[in-house]
Length: 501
Image 1: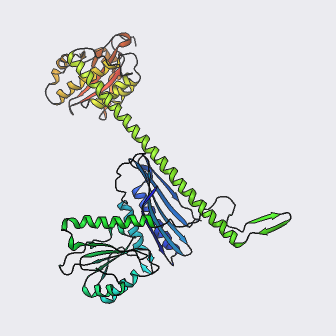
Image 2: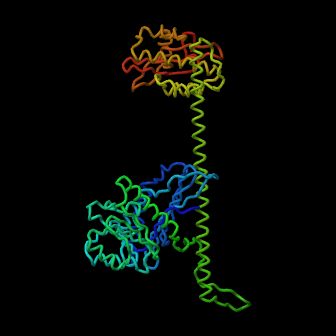
């Protein structure tokens, strides 16, 4: 388990309205980016939200190729303070050492953090955490920032970019903080006067025009970039490396805030004074013991939360693996269909009877034909009748449909006329009849009628194959208005002049 991103901010003197605002922002983010009815396989979401719970939390598990990302955002309203904590944790799922992709935070999450900071005043060292660079143009403003660098309560880095006012080059952070929003105080020093004020109180050296400095909390040596010494093509990559260093440092530095466990649904209250009975006397546990018990309870809740995250990551990974294997099976099924169809086509060209035994039913033969015969339209009646047909060789039915598809292609392209359909079918080896008998048309018309484009039509044309148990008829309707070929029926012999009823 490795934390790859963390933002943890506090808004002092907050109100219930602030909490509701933050919850609404992140609820909208969840609905927009992970809608309930369209989450992909390997993605799961858990939400902690109750009217009697001061903690609102969203946990999103997403399984990638060799790892699972667990992104958690927490909004907690405790002691009139609003806590915003967002972090991404990675769980490896492959037992191999190989280069991994960058675990950059999703831009949508960064935008939601920015929106939260725009609506709610989060503070660090009594200074509001801004979503835009603070432009410093006077000596006094420079001194204020220099004092902020040495503020003992500061938790966030102060990133100071000194504009290259000697060469009038635009600042690299002119467009804003990007993924550093909520992680730093960003300051742009715009002239020598502001630079002198900052240098005076910060006590830092090598603060020159065209340089960028990340002044860490705690007084560690600043991270420095001198754009003067970089070619223009290298400035943006260097800025990205600079930001990545800050993000990685924050992920390793910011602990998970201590939060109360979720409320219980039963009547047991584990925050009341504990008591124990010895004989007939009740002795109250001391306040120190009570606080220690509460701390133990919080630690236990955090351990259980961490365990839940691990189990959810494993479940998300398993879901992703199942979906991948299902996709592979579907691909193999498509490949098998293509092999069967190619074999049938080759056998047709060679004039042989196909020797394929991979098709188990006429229904399966129709499924393959529907996927690979683009010039045929299969009517609902054809699908239903094929599903109920047993006995005929499915491969021979597929063979006839493939041959009919080639005839349909030629007819739709104008290569053959209406009167040439019979000849074209016979050339393809199809036993084709363009009409049924007058008796069948007059007495059993309903057997041959289908609903097509909002009106009843007669599908008289048919392909004949087999005898007795192997007999099958494929009825077809040639729509001469739209130039479409509709397979209307696949089944046993329909009633005609030889039928008794």
